[in-house]
Length: 426
Image (cartoon, rainbow, N blue to C red; front, side, top):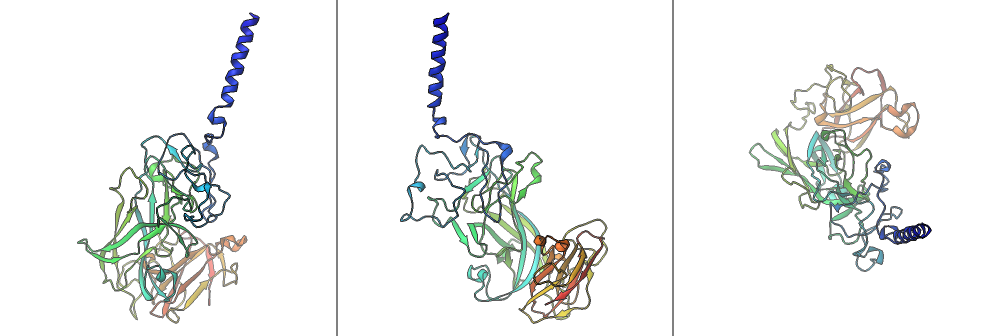
């Protein structure tokens, strides 16, 4: 009995010794992540988050290197300055921030167009958007819109660090306007007539692919925290990236396009940089009526039959609503192409105007109130970081339209809400 116990103890000791020498205990394989600790990434700072890592195959094939989240993002290394750290090795695991999923599972991206807006802007010859080929110098008419690209597939779209060695040449570029990395040529925008003929073309838009928000079209069983950002690019399964209409180059230049009925066409992942389960749904359309440009005596809507000063029928919210606005005084004059600021926000520096409640401001070209589609500019919560009671006040800056005249509208964030907006301009 004593010999049996000693033999059992020896066998147990041997098993523990072998387990201690197993590859998983030698650092050759990262430990599985805790899904509950899926930390949120920061969009502005570009600090990558560390996701959970169930064992399976990569969604996007990358050079298998480990990314140090504490290292600053720099230009991708050239062969001359590449280090041993960047070299691929057969026994090195994929990056710790790379998702792993069931074999064969792939992401699936779809484009969603929303919130169109027609805007006039004057560009100098040296403007960043002129240098990047988005438009040309002079006074231009732009059709702006939001583009949201949800990932409705079965796995994350993973691209990883744009500075990772081994990338195809020109896959990423550093955007000097946005001050972060972009995936080149991710989206293509066209304006077509009802017969499908192209009448205007947008710049091939580059994206910083990240988690902007959860896409509730897939239900509520979604990852709870964002994972991807401009330094560690991708889109969570069940999340979406949104490029807002206010961003540089997020438009089609429609200068000279006659008024009429058209369709915005958006295509994404054109070069198929990221593998998807389907490419058949990478195109979408949005029907839109393009009004005539504002004339000397016409409002910016130029015949569009939306009156944003009519009472709202419900508790609608936000700058995009087209009801419940109030006209502030008579139309104002300005020198075309100059910068104008209108505000009721004593909290911004320097302060401009005074407010109470939660007001919004909309600027219209010409002498009449305008719908959101043709607003020159809008604002809600100009200085939310001021920390004081004025954080809900508004301040808007815009370029004086070619007509040399503009109309100011104000309204509460929620239709029917109480507010005061004592405006000043400069």
